[in-house]
Image (spheres, rainbow, N blue to C red):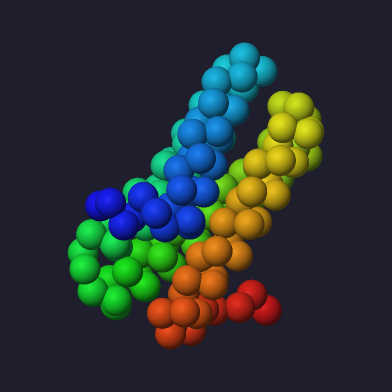
Length: 123
């Protein structure tokens, strides 16, 4: 696990997860149960899947877990966009988090390329 903690994607994902969870504690979101739950689950699953894939020990399992983390990152990005578009929370706070999620997506895609995985591209 020591090497996992040195993995930049895991560190960024953990920070994003923590910040996204804190964002959901905003009092303006108090009654947005479904959105809060989805946002928290997506955010928490990103570093958890990276850790799981890393711990399983094979390249194929790591690639699979990184792809799941990539999907959860895209899901989180979508939820953040929704929060911003309906003005449920401060725009700048969400903007910073969105930029960091975009950076994380880049890190995950880079890792997948490095591991030789073909990453699907949106049409």
